[in-house]
Image 1 (tube, one colour):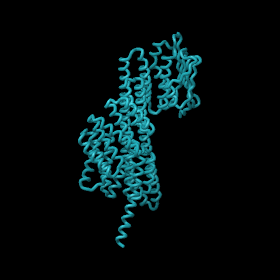
Image 2: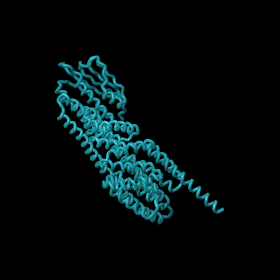
Image 3: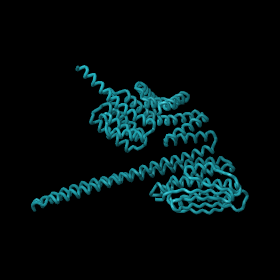
Image 4: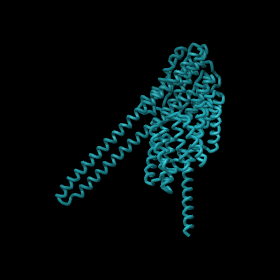
Length: 566
């Protein structure tokens, strides 16, 4: 009878453990498929009623992994702290080991290698004195390999720990660890210029991630694969694979990977001598970098504002609580005059201590807010510096190319240069504004047209521009600036024959929440011809507008767009 009871207990334990694993495994599956928002909802739903303390810890760690992929390091840190507190309550050695492994990756991802190494040393101490399951050990050795790869650059050590990780990952069929351990091995082959072996590994990893629906993994290996093809000078193959990778990454909305692969496409076209295509993709890189930086600025400013509002609300609650407490004490002290006096005296002391404590906390809160504000200013300054460097690099590249290009072909490069200047102008306006998400259309587009004054004078073209003063979003401003730039360039290049009077007219007005965009030239070269400029059409699609083009008396272009200027 006792033997049967033991068997039943073991069965129940194993069933519970398998249920625990199935919940965590499904959450990891959502992460691997890049369904990050679904994963957050899934983990939080199960956190409401975890089946065991161990499952609760794994759910918290799972949420930390998701927010790390979303580059939300504050939330990542919060959930790792909660997981650590729960681990200390349970005393589970293996989960304590897993926590240090996650902290290694958390700090490595942010480039804080000294902090990562501290957690590596703590994990190593646990490993030496305890039995750890193969899945966690595989992750640990994989993190050690990545630190040697990115921080120390010691190829033999990378191979040593990557192979250890791979052997254990295959043993427990841990797909993510199998992938990244193999990726580290392939990267060493590429570093040693054994491109043939490296490319074979990368192709197998693309197939493996595709078969197992590992979205983020496939996007990561595409970067290594196309970089190695460039190093091996397989330019035609690089272009084919990079464009395929770019389509996959765009479909899965992976902005960072899109920036890297688009840069590879630009580099490939440049090496192939197709400068027109190269500069098209270079312009896309600039737009993507601007989008990435604006997104991170807006997220940071929003978080800072929310934290300040929350702190203000908490302070008000504390003040209200103090007022209610004082009123209750005053009402309760009306029994005897002596007790009233003594009570008031004690209350006065208590209030003084509470207020002193409150003021101390408020002072500390103000210091933290001041620190956050200074950090924000630093981040904005650093971002401005990096964006200026990127734009300066583009200008230098185009200027160098202009020196090597004939006068006949130099106009195309000036065309690209004006587009880059349009984006640079937008950046300057955003940096000057208090609200980084909006710009004044009149000031911005006037600055854009000013960059054409020399070209207008060189070609004897008269202009008549009118732009209403209206605040618009930074994204809308960028596309309007590029569109106006492209229209002006097309008119200068194609519109006019040998005619004495050359004129451009541009008017942008804002009435009753509608933005009216009207552009025209009196050029005779394209009269009665059906034209549809490709880049103009693409920009209209980005703006989500239907444009009207008329060539009866020259060239005219117009559209209207509803916007809310709240």
